[in-house]
Length: 227
Ligand code: NI
Image (cartoon, rainbow, N blue to C red):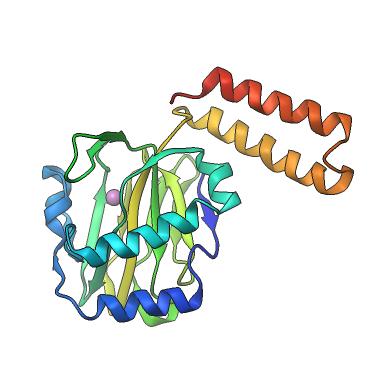
């Protein structure tokens, strides 16, 4: 399941990000690639240990922590601190897999990458090419979203970023370890939660069936969640 998570950042936040990112030196993107993906990765990144990377990443994480659609879809346990990349002058990132386990920089903490996230920081009309292409059982999906919006997709998917033939594509990328490891269980909980939210609007919080379905949601969480 590929989710479009709108309005992770406001227009003014995106503008602030872009202005601040223009002030510092970007580095070669191969620094965070695995040995296999380094051969197809051709882009630039903000230095991982730069205070600005940490500062902007924190803004994204604070926004996601209050985003109902993200929380419902991802059921996050932990999130890798966001990184930032830039593609221009025909740069691309060919088809690759993301590492299944990632260490949080500067710590001994490791995360299983269940979900991959890209927050778009350039408007679609600012660049040509640069689609995020994600493969699932229905084939290939070309993804290019408005600045401030995010795509959330299973880290099990093969994916690529096509060459940016003109303009500049800036984005943030990071990974989520979900409390629900299994994708079909996570999707079941997402659908149940969305239906409960809709029924709460129609019937009110105290309707007996709303309470029963909410109880079912939490019982499935108890059965499936890993903390
Ligand atoms: Ni990737």
